[in-house]
Image (tube, rainbow over all chains, first blue to last red; front, top):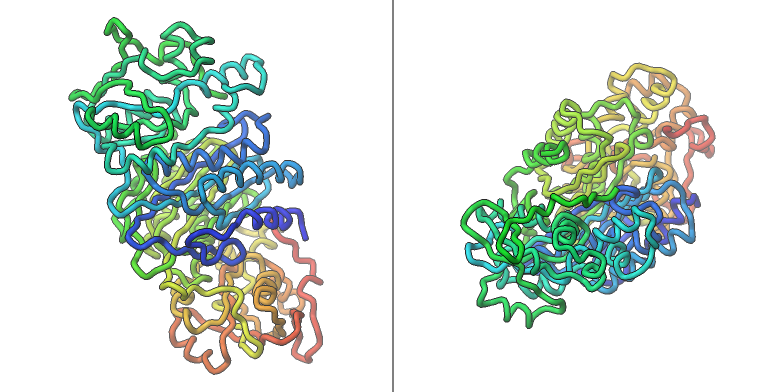
Length: 314
Length: 314
């Protein structure tokens, strides 16, 4: 058995008996039974070492993140995770690395009840492509295109920690602590996305930074937004490290890797939304009639999230 | 707009109005409506430049082959192609290359009625991961595990052309002609796979070479097989280049990239099977009770397909 056959054997252990898996790994393709009355939600993301995660990222965290970023896309559509495939390109088969990688992947897969049903392993520079499939009741998927003038713009969790972690790592900071954990182990907001089907008018996940990602909602919905910079939810670590609002905004709106959800919700439904989800929900601004996306400070003056010196990894 | 946004715009043109596509490219994920009463068939394959295709392969052919190898997996399950995603890693955005690549992808996608519904484009060494989703009537997927003692082992088309093309290219041969076309533009046997649901007891697609791939059927079905080497269907080009049976067998059973189907069919159903499909079907041997896979020559003597000097690319 060659080393790559060994890898495939590793991954076969990740295939668990799960709802709808008629045939997992071990044939030309997987056979899956979709839930009657549901639509499929399908997303693909590639992570490349040195580009989407630092080269020294732990194998466990690489496995975690490759699945997490795809689960985050499912969450933004309000979809329940079901099945995923993994295309893994590796410079060499290293058993301890693989064991840790599989543990990270499996921990997250188990948490969200998603089953590995297929994949491909090839030799080359380290990269990972996950395709995740979820399900939503027919017609119920959240989209980017439904935001309405007057909607509250809301975000889950806190923003900016991962961007600050990257900045600090770039300056030789330690590879540990709560900020780095936010970078390495994003928490896909699947429960929140699913719970807010039928409540949120529009949703997107924040992977490239609030300013760019919210822009996609505004373009798809033909609206604008005004965001209160001081309202952006920040962790104690971020507030401590960046007391200056402009510097903080650069991380919170210009930085990426948050993997929180941004949702547009009618103001009178925000309280109901909060009660349905397992993560804090913060109103950060309003949808407006124009096409513009404005960030304002406490005095109402416009503030540019791109003005600061934040530089995206790498 | 950065160059990779431009690439995404290219691919958006590949998304056509197709059955079941509620939302294609342009949101966090695609939304797809499966056919009631069907199961999903899902497969993922990665192609890496210099490993799965020669570096000098034309962009059109790279696009073609990335989709074709996945369609071939769907064919081996008897699944109708529906939707696919593409994760493309590129060293740089080169507009003429991309136009040709998309043309190859689209030509094949149109032929088989499969729609691009999502993807990701990243920068790095050239590689492509396609995830293809098909549908079969519930319970009807062809598998590797159903071969029965006495079944005729059959293959579609001819075997060995792609392996010979690789040999000749490695020896400085011209990058043209019918052999190279078999290597660069495999023809997925989708019609045959779908037509033989309910007739074939087992199926696999021939990507790594008959000897290795048939072994998977034998292991999954707990049977053996005896294959008549001189019965393996060969093109006139292959017969002309390799008149010696042992040398030919090395290409036909030990070489890869055929993308034909190998099917196990009850002998009294082979004629009916032939009438249902759009490609020649050749009986090459029988399923036997033991675990052994034997290749024999016209005198009945065992002949080893690995004995010859055939070397897989690269």
